[in-house]
Amino acid sequence: MSPDFDRLRVVLVETRNPLNIGAAARAMSNFEFLRLRVVNPYEVAFREARSAVGGAPLLKAAEEFSTVANAVADCTLVVGTTAVQRRELQHPLRPLARGAPLIRKALASGRVALLFGSEKTGLSNDNLSHCHWLLHIPTRQQHLSMNLGQAVAVCLYEISRDVKRAPSKQEKLEKRATAGEVERISTILLEALHRSGYVKANAVASTEERVRRMVRRMGLSSEDAELWLGMFRQMLWKIKAEPASKK
Amino acid sequence: MSPDFDRLRVVLVETRNPLNIGAAARAMSNFEFLRLRVVNPYEVAFREARSAVGGAPLLKAAEEFSTVANAVADCTLVVGTTAVQRRELQHPLRPLARGAPLIRKALASGRVALLFGSEKTGLSNDNLSHCHWLLHIPTRQQHLSMNLGQAVAVCLYEISRDVKRAPSKQEKLEKRATAGEVERISTILLEALHRSGYVKANAVASTEERVRRMVRRMGLSSEDAELWLGMFRQMLWKIKAEPASKK
Image (cartoon, rainbow over all chains, first blue to last red; front, side, top):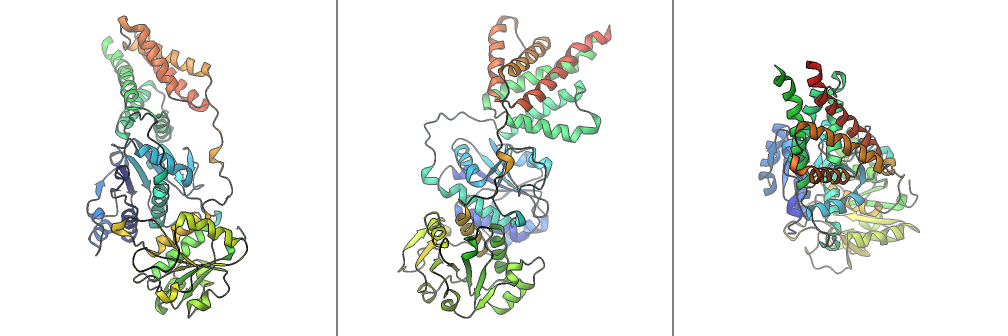
């Protein structure tokens, strides 16, 4: 197996149909991506898929999480999949053939999470706020939305497609910030903004999502992430400390 | 639709599972290949797939044949799909990425049949004898055989991969922040850091330089620059305002 492939996490979010979980697992096994994570799956579906005859070992080894934040915390790149034009997209959106090389490149130095939403609704805006960018499979206007298991198969096929021609590792590989580090920055920054009166009461959710996306667009290295975290912590401390010190 | 795509015939031979017929039809619809032929399908499976809720119109328009010979009679190129190494192959065998351009080329002037065998046994030697060459999807040794619906999806994805679809507006060029905007952000951020006690007296210059570089590494778009500026301004206002309001 390519050691890089072992760094991909296929993350199924709120999947409802056990057949789709099984199909995703099978495609993963075909293309040698063996690390599955599930977020808040429909319990019965996940149990059924896990115990299905011939169920892939990777299904039995799947890790279960209750939030997307936790499921992607150790990843340096988080990519969401979407059937385009279903919502106003706030993220960079790349067709699969252009996004796959970026995923391969990121896999050379860190873990990458590839998110697939539920069959009915796809990824929610909150799910998307954890993503650095979005991927879509070019399909025809009249029938954009693909079956989940087929979408997983096509994405993994493309990611493994040119593996022999993978970019050379001459480029210096800077260690990227993990999603967990990025999320900590977002949390501290958001608290500072709340306490500064930046977040309007009638726009809390949308502001939080926007700030999350902005922090992710910074494309932080692990080193810079630590520095930003320190700066925001200090500012937050000051913002919180002032009134108390006057008492 | 590309007129060429209309010349492809996806031919499912002796398919047993109605879900697989439905899945194949869905992938065909996604990628705009709308001509399905079935050879000697398991009768009940075909009826079920045809009448499934949301069944694609292309499934209802599917043509039924009793032999492969008849199903491919009007095609100028006949390509079989196979999970390699299951039998002694007498045909040229091409990986999908190399076979797809040949299929596209053939579609420019005539009909092409793309054959998929049954779930259990694939295409028989007799079926294969009608093929000009064979196509396989590169999968790992330990798990060569793909689910039928997923194999159809991956093949059709690759065949349509380099064909231009309506350009998505997502990749419009984002306006970058000017050096002036970036410098304004640095200045406000630095003032907030000074007033928060982040900048040590003996390291003013080096901290300022480091913060300037970090802000530049954010690689900001003009839009994001404005948002960051707003956030830092608000935090600075809060940091400065507290003591004053207590006087």
